[in-house]
Length: 65
Image (cartoon, rainbow, N blue to C red; front, side):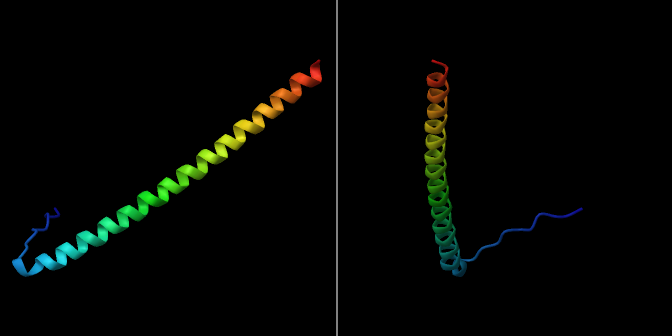
C-alpha cells in the first residue's frame, strides 16, 4: 500500500513556495488566455459556417422559385 507523503514546510521554504505559486498563477493565466483565444476563433468559425449555411439555404429556395 502506498502511503501519502507528508507535507513539511519550514519558514525558510516560504520564498520558494511563493515563487512556485507565482509561476503557477502565471501559467494559469496563460492557459486561460489561450482558451479564450481558441474560444473566440471557434465562435468566429461557427459564425462563418452559419452564414454559409444561410447562403446555401437561400440559394436552394431561390432556385426552386
